[in-house]
Structure formats: structure tokens, C-alpha cells
Image (cartoon, rainbow, N blue to C red; front, side, top):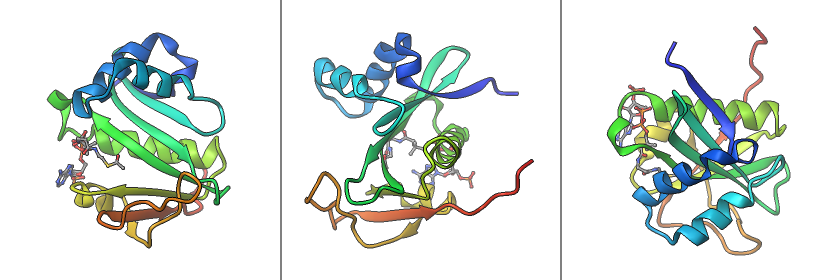
Length: 157
Ligand code: ACO
């Protein structure tokens, strides 16, 4: 009943500017670079998912390719509007993004790395794992917590 929707940005390009502002409010980067990154969202990976509440962008996450792992993705740039944190929206975004990975992209494992949000991800069922090779060769940093979530088969309802 909260009127929440998680959709890929490339299907709803009218939200690109709002999305850009939301991400840049947390991690400052040039608008041009940010927009270019959002422009690469597609039906396969990479995919930028946005969380909409009453037609406003209140959250974002990016699903990136891991070249060496066809059944997995790397989740990055997870962010909820600063004024709306602590209300369960981040949890809703991640759970819905996981469903998208499983049901639409047919992926089985989600990797991410975090320094600072360990509790948020452990509550969602992510476990610590060794660093994974992303971006064709370079490993995700070992100074941060590497997490993985292996999808279970869920009951169809
Ligand atoms: N420390 C401890 N617990 C936390 C934290 C935190 N920083 N953030 C959330 N939680 C807990 C909540 O208490 C809640 O627990 P509960 O289910 O027992 O009630 C649960 O995690 C879910 O919390 P939400 O309210 O859904 O989290 P929120 O909407 O605030 O979103 C997020 C969390 C996305 C991390 C948000 O705080 C944010 O945008 N932070 C700034 C950007 C950031 O750090 N993003 C993560 C980068 S890592 C990555 O992208 C892979």
C-alpha cells in the first residue's frame, strides 16, 4: 500500500535527470559522466533500477556485469533519498532488485562490496565471501566487506 515501484531506467528515461541528482547527492560526479552511465542501462547487464514512490525517484541501484561469471552480477551505487532513510525503502529496493535478478535476468548469485553498510546487507541475507574479479582483471578491493547472496528456490505464490 506504499505505492512503490522498481523499474529499469531505460524503460523510463524521463526519470534519468532525477536519478542522476539522487546519485550525485551521495557520490558527487559530473552530470555528463553520470548521465552517460545511466544511458548504458539495458535489458541485459548493466541495468540501473530505480525505486519510484508516487512518481518520484527515491532510490537507485546498478546491476553490473562480472565478465568471468555469467550467472552473477555485481550490485553497486545503492542509494535511498537522504530524507527518507530508515523507513524500509532500502530493504524493499534490494529485495525487489533480487527478484529482478532471479526472474528477469535469470541470475543466481549477487555480489557486492561495502564499507559501512555491513549490517544492512547482513540483515538482507548477504554473506562475507572472497573478493571477486570485476571489470576484467582488477579485483574488488580487499579493504571492504565482500558479500554474496545465493538465491534460493522460492515457493511460487
Ligand atoms: N547501520 C545499521 N543498520 C542499518 C543501516 C546502517 N547504516 N542502514 C539500514 N540499517 C538497517 C535498518 O535498521 C533496517 O533493519 P530492520 O530490517 O531490522 O528494521 C534494515 O537495515 C533496512 O533498513 P532500511 O530502512 O530499508 O534502509 P534505508 O532505506 O535507510 O537504505 C541505504 C539503506 C541504502 C544503505 C541508505 O542508508 C543509503 O542510501 N545510504 C547512503 C549510501 C550508501 O552507503 N549506500 C550503500 C553503498 S554499498 C553498495 O552500493 C553495494
